[in-house]
Length: 136
Image (tube, rainbow, N blue to C red; front, side):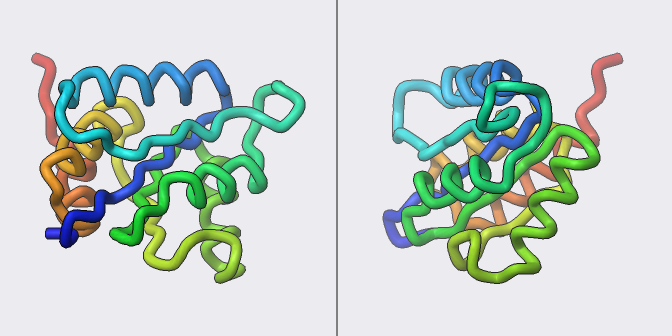
């Protein structure tokens, strides 16, 4: 457990609209209970497609409540941007983790799990487990 502090979730997409929509979906499916801090970080500062280290760092700072920050990404360069920020060491809040999970299903699992007050390890595990969800 996270001692009353909730894990923050950052959703990094190449598209602002995609990041915002997935954040809305995940929060909506988590129900009306505890308000998990979720921030989309999509696109570039100018509104184009791509990723922005500045937007990611700002989103992580906005959701940091002291219980850790889980960052989920959509595609390749989003992963690389987050890895670069983590390697720099001072751009993201302490205890920020890049989570290897499918973007939509992982985001829903992460937010639902964080809403229970679970710690960062449990939020990461729930998001990663979404790889095993079968649709057929």
